[in-house]
Amino acid sequence: MKDLKTFRYRTTYGIQGTLLFLKEIQSVAFEEIVDIIMPTGEIRRGQVLQADKNATIIQVFEGTQSLDVVNSEIIFSRDVFRVGVSETMVGRIFNGLGEPIDELGTIIPLKRLPISGSPMNPIRREKPENFIETGISTIDGLNTLVEGQKLPIFTGSGLETSEVASQIAVNSRLLGKNRTLDIIFVAMGITERIGRFFRETFEKASSSSITFFSNYTQDSIVERLITPRVALTFAEFLAFEKGRDVLVILQDMLNYAEALREISSAREEFPGRRGYPGYLYTDLATIYERAGKVKDQKGSVTMIPIVTMPNDDITHPVPDLTGYITEGQIIMSRDLANKQVYPPINPLPSLSRLMNEGIGKGKTREDHSQLANQLFAAYAKGMNLRQLASIAGKEALTSRDQLYLNFADKFELHFISQNERRTIEETLSIGWQILTAIPKTDLNRISRTFIDKYYPEGEVLFPKLS
Image (cartoon, rainbow, N blue to C red; front, top):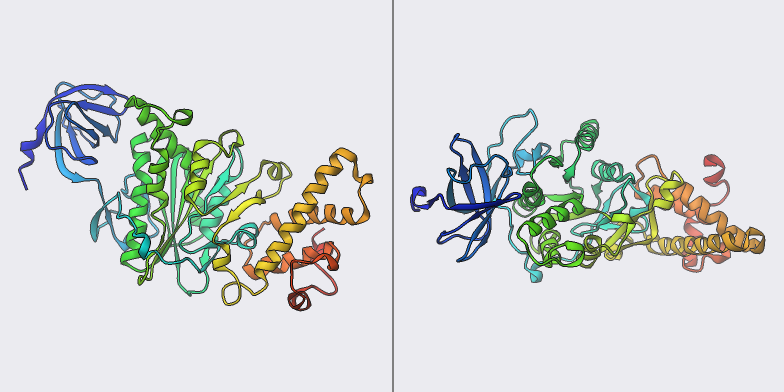
């Protein structure tokens, strides 16, 4: 390798935001890491964002504030950004660059891996099939998460998103394999208050398998773009080199996209929809497509990206493109939140495209699919009648319609709303008990065999909970 002195430059001619512009640079690679040495001796790190014959653009991780353009020296490393990984990182707390920020000391890495990862060969992808229990009935019962799946949560500003995300992190477990599910929680652009909430929640859970990567609002936006890739590189190391099963939770992908838009604007790139760069879809795909299972390997990476929808607009570019790349969506509802229903997850617009691969006999229970279909149908009918009643009044409804209105209320109160972690058996049991609110003859989506076996007889749930 050549001496680094060969690659020292003082040809900076401009700064814009977190970007540094250089000229007369030769043999520079995209995403190459650089050190910026200031006259004071301070060293800042950056990454090559663009390299052509006219200019070289560098993203400065720590920002360009007070950077001496004339006298600073740029050293090109001839290598991409790498993060040190080791199994001893499990359960630790890191900043967005993968540096430990807890009080447990430094990490001695087993190896250093490029954060861009290695593309997963589609031919080698294995079909997801193992059920992941989150403890939340609207997910486990109606929109099941499957090992290796990427299932986003679409939420709105002001909803209890952090509470739901941390609950999933603390309570999730992989069924069917009798193996531990490692959790990697990635927080991007969060406030100090939210960061403290996550840390305290994870500490109270006494779980040694939750690894926390945090990027705060005051941190560099360049770091925000690196944070999910650092975390996913660690996840891939655990999954595909150590044979472990990993669930990665990314909150909030809107903050990530906003950082990408800011960088794009500083580069004066031609904007796409709502000012986001035209390559937003491709960039998001480089993150989401790192989830999955590989044939002949034990480990897996499952992903839950959390996306805030500005003004609750699901057609906003970030949730819209996320929906195209991923395998379904979980929708958090402001209407349910206003009714004090927690978690406020609306099952009707939610969808898990891989649900049927992870449920059924030997995975959850034989009646799971049919029970879910019946609950969906009954709740959808109840919601339609609720809308009709708001126009014509309840008096205009038949007695049978009144039963479905009552079912919708009980479904929200006893199935969607929950204060405790539920096993899948408890979720299915509650589902059956709620079905007693409608005529047994209306259970046309469930086979007679399952009705005879699981339909509750005698006292049911409602007298105890009402």
